[in-house]
Image (cartoon, rainbow, N blue to C red):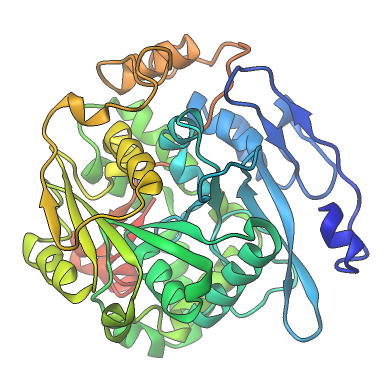
Length: 424
């Protein structure tokens, strides 16, 4: 922030305060970009509905969301861009976490604390047009604009070649970025990559009034709840409903519909021709129970990329960074630390031993048998009881996302064209 002000950017920005939590190894640093706070310390730019969320992971991670200035366009105006910022620079390469289609940085709420405890400099960034950035002055939200915004964010704040992580449609965002700005990327991690869809097809030619109607459906509670029910098993209905509220939180911002319609009308992402141009090392992570990305597609991607390693997550679905966050955090931490490896390597991790190297002995996040046990260990909560106030704040991920190809024909007509990517 200080650097931006000193360089003459965003001269109208206000100096903001930051509040530090006390949990060892996970300091809460929240900067809301406008100096205000709402109840329970949440940044004031978040929709007030954050107060109704019960998931302690989402609540804790939301406390860390802040807005940083990103210079855009020839007129050099700034977008206050939402993210969870690494609270310390590390000697290792920074890890930048993107999210899936129409989601937010909250998608990383489970895995992010593990990455920090593993000693990584992790950034969770909202892609332009989604998340919680201030888009009161709405820029184009097409693929080139999203790419340029990410570059400007990297140039202003990350500043070093990064390990760029993209799940589902976020993998297309990562590939598009790496091909156009190779100097900003050290290597890629592509999770359940949705990269072979050629844009959104006929949806880009819809009359705007129809597009707006479809977008209204996209943020509806019934559709989002349906996506959760289809994506996650063995959790209570109340948890499904709560995760639905987390996943649609960014949709409640006043510019979300305009930004999403702009993206749809632009044609979406088409990176098929760019995949073979990627010169960076890439780790492809897939759940072996992914109903969206087939083994055939994963093999094709490994072949098309010049230097790819394939890793399988046992019993993982389309969202392994949520469903099997410990495995994914381990893979990210290990791959970020690797200097070189043989290309076209393939392995299926199958045991808990694959998390070796993360702080299993001391971390409250990995001493667990399942997600509910994880919650109890990290927060002293049982299911979705109201979280108790403790000194051990942590981070959280947005709720589930579901690929459009798993929806009914009517629902797929609205969202299926958006690269078959996940919807939280």
